Length: 130
Image (spheres, rainbow, N blue to C red):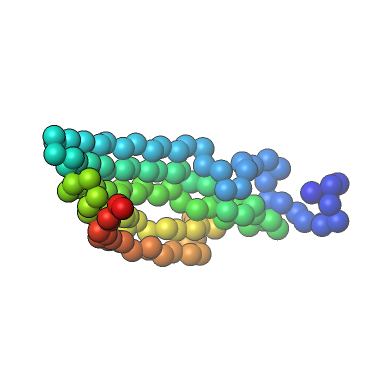
C-alpha cells in the first residue's frame, strides 16, 4: 500500500484474501411444476443459499481482520396461475432469519463488533395479464 498510494499503514498480516470475497458459495433450488389443460399452472420453489466467512476490512496496527461470518438462507416461492390472465404469487423470504455477525479477530478470541437480523419477509400478490 505504501508503495502504490500516499497512505502509510501497518497491515497486521503480510498476505490476506480479497475483501468481500467468500472462499465458498453455495446456491441450490428445488422446484415442482404442475400444469393442467385449462391453463392452470402451479410452481413451488425452495431456494437455499450460503456464503462462507469473508473479510470486511483488513486489520492494521496489530488488530486482526474484520470478518463477516458465513450465513445460510432459505426462501420459498409459490406461483399459481388460475387461468390465462389471473395469477397469485406467495413468497416467504429469509425463513431461517440468521444472525449477520461481523467480528474483529484478535489473539485471544474474535470479538463481535456488529450483529443484526434482517427479519422475515412475506408477500402475497395478485396478477392480472391483459
